[in-house]
Image 1: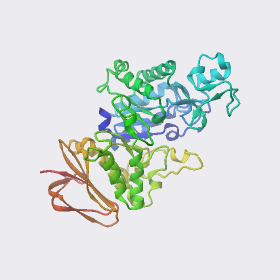
Image 2: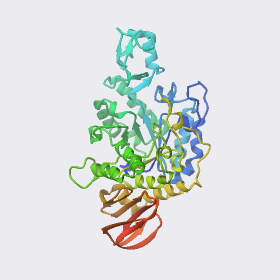
Image 3: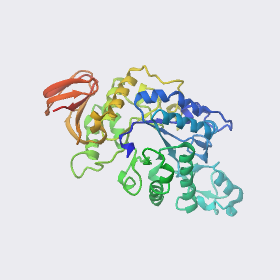
Image 4: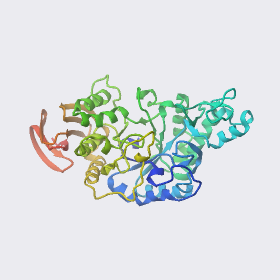
Length: 449
């Protein structure tokens, strides 16, 4: 599946475009701002953009009003089609955020229930008890998402709801030519619905996707905890967010304990038969729209580049949250995510870290770095501040070397003998059982013999 060798760029559109936090009803084509970044994203090495919610909503996008109309704060459906066409013209695919667990109180079907109560034809689209009352005094109780009653839980076991959502996906492909989906709070979704979705994108939707070069339509689930294979398998989803390694990435640098991330990576992808997720391609990330920015999370700013070197070199599909590639700061405050989702006037292509990330992502798309997309994983050298691991497949072997210390470190192993090419610098090296990793440095060593 094409997503397995992709590099993702996540955009939270309402913040990225500087839209009001509450829906003011004014139609402004702010989404076209993305076209001003297309060339930058292509040069950065991005081949897929993941958009968080873009459809009409009450406020933050996850409280949907209408699945088939662009949020007026972002513009019109025609504006968004212009954006997806422009991204495709730059060789960049498009993923949308499928928010299928819940809708907003302004969702058209829920408004009908509030008006007509038991007489509404949509009353069974939700989990409703007309013998109770809601926090809003609706005269009936309904189930919200994890206690958030502004988010009304959908009844995904109802065939009408299921058909409405799959018809919406078909509409998105026809109207916007999208290439796949992220599934919000996938760990909450009904498993039979996920099975149906898996079938839908591989059978009925295939006719609509037939004009694409690669008609695969990946489904990526947001999963925070538990066994990922419960819903990432041959019957449901294709991939998911790797929150275990997200925590290990920043924590290993902050605590000076590379054993933590090495343990998580070996537990998930190591060579032993008991390792949990061998062969799976999960989404790797340093931050996103729900957590503090990596530049604000790392104690030592000099760890930003080696963190990117580790994240893009480990097994998985790397995903960069917009503007974090140049170290934008952002911390969540008082249940508000606003500081995590700011508007930037333009990208910073001349930033040193951006140039470094560009080199990493460009290499990942090259044939000589093929093992970074498909290779297995094996720890080679682990200390508190250093980590060396091997990625190996039928097309070669690469040693990813990370140094979180400020001074050079000599990593020794019998495996580090022979001729190598350090891919980031392009330098050829003849090693005799050790390699020096610069302070705060990253090496990607490809074996040449």
